[in-house]
Amino acid sequence: MKQLSRTIEDRKLAGVCGGLGKYFGVDPTVVRIAAIVLFFPFSLLIVSLYLIGVFLMPNEGDVRGL
Image (cartoon, rainbow, N blue to C red; front, top):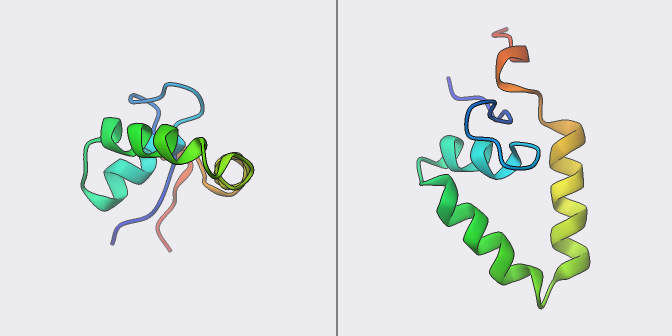
């Protein structure tokens, strides 16, 4: 079962984009570019979603199976 988590190895800032890329099976660079492109028209939304991801997504090593 896949679990959403922030990456440790592919971390540029906090690992949120790397974790999203790994979860959805796309290159994390694509997720980062999409976040940058969407930042200009939706800056407050993108920053808010990123911060929510930082606080709600566990680090990759902290994920435990239930």
